[in-house]
Image 1: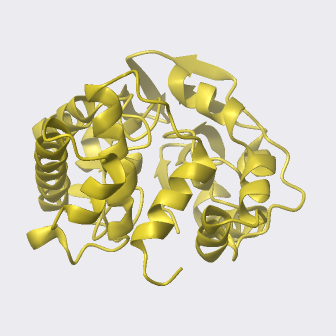
Image 2: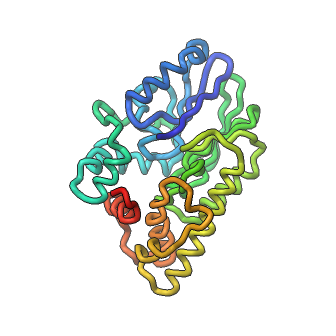
Length: 284
């Protein structure tokens, strides 16, 4: 469902993100034991406030947990209780959410928020390994941290990059996400670890950037023509991006463009946005 990562140094490690439930996170931590037995996890970075990147925090609560300020705000608004309520809702959005998240178990999850908050950038030394945290949000969410390890020529992108799937612009604006892609493309990094999908290269960053530019242009044209947001989402043809997984995210992305163009439009809450995606998804 989502990716995490481990950066090891002399005698300590940094964990990038926990996973969506306790079972998954425990399995990951157990699998990492050959590395963390001699280099225990001393720092955890949550790249953003979506649950699939922090709901397992309680299993690493002994560590110093770090996140951008906007990410913590998101965590306070939507925790495991809210996600559980969404997945059991008797609505199109609830059924759609159940299809996506029904495999996960929210039982026993105690929200553990980061105890260190940063703005802009933060530099860490993890047992001699330099790690740079850069908040490139708001974009996908209210705060989006990329974790750059220059020595390894590697960057963990959080959900700024979905490899092989359509991005979803929960927060925006699009301009911030495009700028975030430019930051990633400017780094001296060969290995790109996306928030979702296989480990990849900067080509995946370019694909995300191209998709966002295309959707923004297409949605803006239809907004100017007076077309309602959902009509626009149904009308847009994705062309070379049509094969990206979870293409129904277009409904949320168009709504985000419309809200930026006309801030007087009423915002949609999570259940309503899932309902919009369900309308574009023929399997629901």
